[in-house]
Structures are given as structure tokens and as C-alpha cells.
Length: 182
Ligand SMILES: [Zn+2]
Ligand SMILES: [Zn+2]
Image (cartoon, rainbow, N blue to C red; front, side, top):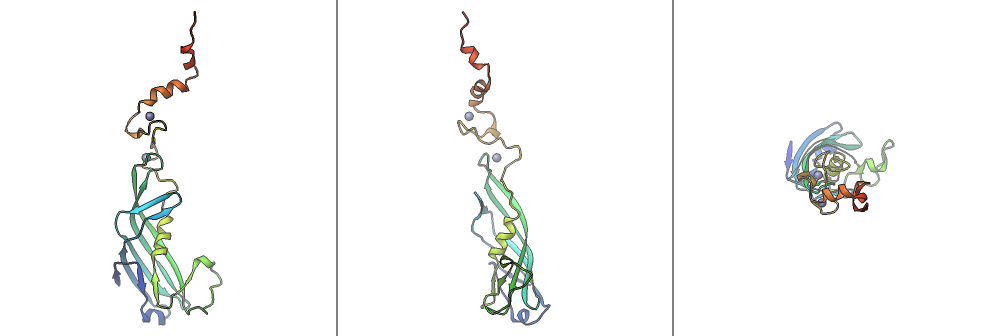
């Protein structure tokens, strides 16, 4: 077992040379903020990762998990909302350099070639794993009331002064009170 403070794996020769050989690696890495559509997730601390790397004969199969706490802004009220994420890391690195045959049963984005220096960068795999765990729309609560569109007050903290006026405008009979019957 090898522990690192970064998110790269230097593949040892014994693993490269022996089919069916498997090694465990784990570590923690500081990653930059993660962009997911219109949202940006900031990591509260290092992202913990843990993988098994197996020599399949033609490739190195990387499988494991990534764990992190990531925070972003609630889509409605803009308060910070944090998520504990745990996603599956999956990677497939074909050995044999440039002239290696592409695996027949995999799409182009499902595998990569093992770099000549035999160092695997896990960052893209970790980001992919965590992206899949993120909500489509980040909300502090399913019932978040959001911000008042007029004054910007956070309506989760109670109704704002606009509430009464708005109620008046929405009321189809509100105009009647301005009519004079005489
Ligand atoms: Zn909210
Ligand atoms: Zn308001």
C-alpha cells in the first residue's frame, strides 16, 4: 500500500510486467474548484482517494473511490450548501505506448494510453467520479424559499416587507379599492 499527498500514481515495474498483479494506492489531494454546469464547487479540504490498480495483460485497470466535501451556493437563496460526496473512480490505461492496439469493446473516452513515464494522473478520474455525485440543482433545502425578486431578502429568514404589497397586486379585486363609488 502506498500513500501519497498528491493524486498521481507512479506505476512500479513489478505491476507493469506481471499480468494479474494488483496493487493498492491511496492518498489525499488538494484539488481546484470543480465546475459543474453553472455551478462551482469548492472543496472544504483534501479529496481522499483510494484505488486498486490491476494489470489485465493489455492495460492497467484503475478502480476505487474518491471522497470529498464540496460546497457551492444554493441555486435559490445563494446560501452555502455543502455535500459529502463519494464517487467511483474508474480508469483503463492501455500499455504498450503509441503503437498499442485500441481495445475493441471500449469507446475512445473510456480508456487512455499509459504515459511513457508510467505516471497516472488521477485528477481527471477523481473529478469525473465526483461530478457524477453532484445534484443537478444545488439547494440548501428542497423547500428553500429563495430570495425576494424585489428586495433580495432571504425569504427563509421570514417574509420581507414586499409580501404585503405583492399580495395586494396579485389580488384581482385590489383595483376596486381605488374606485370611488359615489
Ligand atoms: Zn436555499
Ligand atoms: Zn422583498
